[in-house]
Image (cartoon, rainbow, N blue to C red):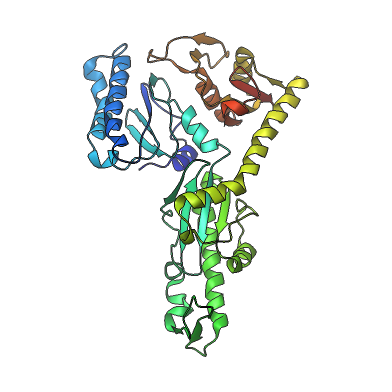
Length: 383
């Protein structure tokens, strides 16, 4: 399965030789709700075909549709979906993303990929990762305020102390005797090589350092998501002492994930993150209102579009569920409103987000209830 974080960083979502096909739909994790998902998918593929036929010959469009049709027949895929699905296709490119949140049904053919739902997921302030840790192994989770899933650590991230230290692991050359039994108020006693328990502590520290480096390189830096540490109290101090991960937040959970159900872990984590989430959205709204009062911000669509193509927009706030069909003149910023069924027409808000990113600005997809304007857009200018 393709990774949104990796593709976004690599620019895969930007460049596309038309026609560019974008399909979104909500999906379901369990039977029997998921039985209708492939049927809805085929209906959306049919809508893509009808849009393509408005400009292209039937013979020419089949190579674009074939990967979508093959996915529709993949029974194993449809038995293991999450809450939403995004599928992007173009000449020589086909990307499938399972999403942790539902998305509205949408089938668009345009001269660029429709990426606003993906930007919403990537840049939503409620996303996070959880590192579950003990002195032997790790577990990694990714989620948002509604959903949490365990994810497979990326290649290059050791999952156990043995993977991390290998032949350099001191514990592999000793035995552990537990007098009275671990878990009954007794600590294990270590024997071998002089019986120095301090060497076990050294192994633990080296394991934590290895995990910190790998998680930062392969997960935190590519995603820029806040990282919450979930471990026993005695491990928090050591891990934080050795960590150089700027995405590791000060607040954590004093419990290992094994002691909680996945939904209990999500609830506990969101209690930690919700104040940060609300504060970030409030700060963005206040920053826009302050900029607008000084003439350095605007929420009128035509005005914002001209500022975007002129490279003047530092931060662009876009309402998550708003769509405005049309085309933007990339040279002037003029907007021609049209019909999304046209294979050359996309969502204006989506295109403005893409253009802002290309110009080096930041884009924030904001829930409707937290949007500081009624127009679906808010821009903060560089000058």
